[in-house]
Length: 97
Image (tube, rainbow, N blue to C red; front, side, top):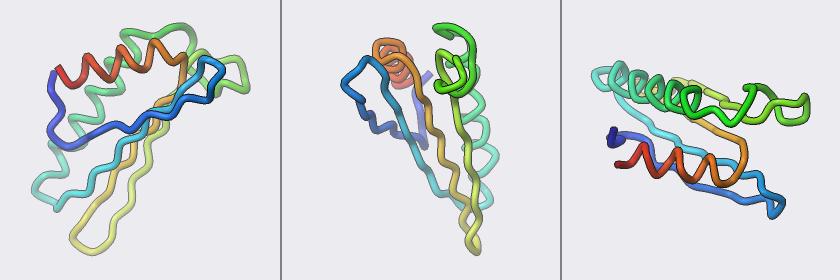
């Protein structure tokens, strides 16, 4: 798929669960493309789901959190994925391909 805007940073909790976060800030003319990229990430995560989506503390196998903020001409989107380490690493590697 190849990502244009999002670059994920990974964190491993040492117990088999990880989190992957990416943030991108764009001007209005690139916002639709960034939102489309976020939608592709979300769809890929759902397709490759290791189990039910939802907060890990509530029994979910993986989850995604999307945040959006605007400051003047810039909009920032933040995507955070959480789930099994191997799943997340494979997912992110596939997104960059």
